[in-house]
Image (cartoon, rainbow, N blue to C red; front, side, top):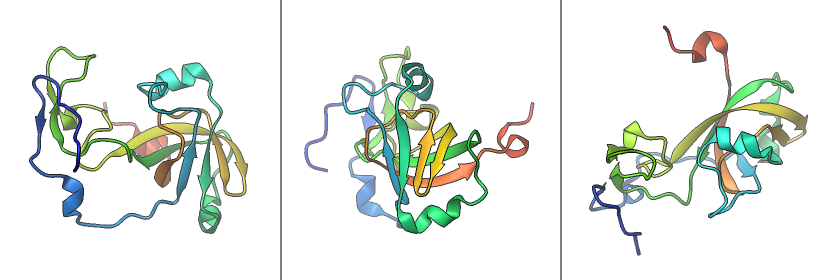
Length: 158
C-alpha cells in the first residue's frame, strides 16, 4: 500500500490492502464532474447542496442509451468509487463523533470497497451528459452505476 497516512487514536487498520485481494472487476460508466478537490470538498451531500455547485456526470458515450426512460427532475441513486480513499481502516475515529466506530457504522469514504452512494436529482439530460443538483466527491470521481430512486422501494418500512 506504500505510504499509508497515520491513523488516529482508536483507529484500527488491516495489515494488508484489501485491493490486493480482489474478488470481482468493475467497469466505470463515466466520471462525475464537480468543483471539488482535496481541501474544499463538502463532508456530505447536504452541505454540497448548500453550495449550489455546477455538477454533472460525463457518461461514456456507449452507455448513453441506458439513460432511456430517465427524466429531468427525477431522483436517481449514484454509486461512485472514492478512488482516493483508504481501504484498510476497519475502525475509524472521525472528528465529528465522540468515540471510534466501525467503518460500517460510518458514511466515510474509507472502507474496504470505497463505494459511495448519493441520491441526487437530474437537472439536465443532454446525450451522455447528465446534470445533477449536487454531489460530494472530487472532480473526476469514477461512476459505477445509476439507479432510479423509487419511493415504493427506497423508503425503509416504518
